[in-house]
Image 1 (tube, rainbow over the protein chains, first blue to last red):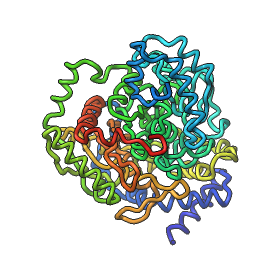
Image 2 (tube, rainbow over the protein chains, first blue to last red; image 1 turned 120 degrees about the vertical axis):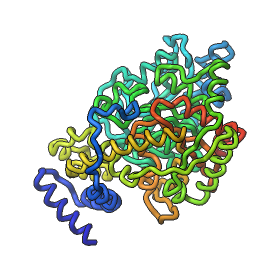
Image 3 (cartoon, chains in turn green, purple; image 1 turned 90 degrees about the vertical axis):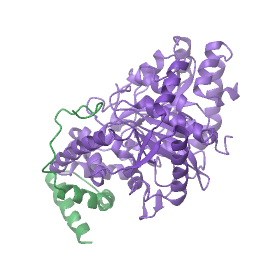
Image 4 (cartoon, rainbow over the protein chains, first blue to last red; image 1 turned 30 degrees about the horizontal axis):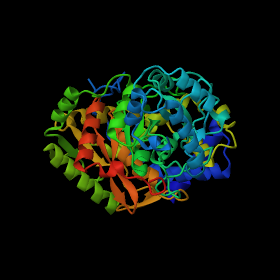
Length: 65
Length: 460
């Protein structure tokens, strides 16, 4: 619930800052989707990726070099 | 001639080539069947008999000469712009020659119609479209899968024997599983994509075939890829069979197997054992470190592909006819911090290296294509051991790795659960598309083709 309130607060701020209009139903959709994927996103945000070398110019048609 | 529509794609092609089938009659029969079955299935959103007949009249002597097929509403045709399952003004695309159109035309195929899709390709269910949802021929109240909902519903519904779909985050494999078909997600970059509105930016979306079995996928896939995929001659087939000997099948039990509905798990376990026995192979338990991050990473990488389009001006002018879920989703995407996307690309780099290492020890990875059979259109949720979840969340876990990393994947029908089809997914290393189809054919042999021959009662 705290997380949902925090997201709602972020949403109101971000919509205003970026000048994006959204009605109540669209905001409810955003909150609903966020609640589904927020745990995974949080895991991504907190994951230790410091040892991962980026793959610049990755060619997705082939195995990594 | 109506019965000829029930032949395999390759049999239709052979019949036309030998003169046993009249392609004009075949096209007429296909159009007749669309009129008969599409009101229930809503698989097709546009037909154009005049252009189809012109394609037939001008068809070169290619591998699909005179054979009717469908193309997903994701590419333009010279006479129709794609709408991506959305109100036409959303994409505002133009008609033109796309890569898949050229590939089909040059193969002599006849495009009989444009197939429905989930609006903007944003779900694995197919329950939302500007044209109304497509329906699963196995149960009209259930989802056909998405986003290639129309191609799957049409092939399973016996309207055509092959259709071109697109797979950005599993969008060929999920509907293949839900509708009891074989669907190939090609290695990234190999199959025709030109004309897709994201073709220049995407590193996740591919075109690919949805057919009733692997041999038909090989034929239509070859056309889309532009090269033979072990087609035809006995020497190549024998070679392919040898390649399957001693197949090393990797399985990652948790969560890809363990968190599936019991009926799905049982069918896939039985298929896995049948495949192992058929090829004298071995099942090897493996792990893929970091795989929990694949879903957010894949979603973020995919959403970054048209992020430049997400300007406030555009977002504030979204068509009110666009579904409310997509209006919310698009606006949410615009608000995601770019720092997360940068991390997603790091996860992709890690996933690709981990998968490459894994494919040094195994030939294919196998797990259920979707964790539960097609849910209700009205409420696309599933019940699996971890609880009740949206079908999208469960499906994405099983499917996105192929798009995140670029590897090919195929879904093969392997059973029924409560009367609805179950699919087993096989993933292989980059460029192993043909070998995956060899494995799919081995699986068909192992199950005496029982599940690729099954038809929904409504069209049997």
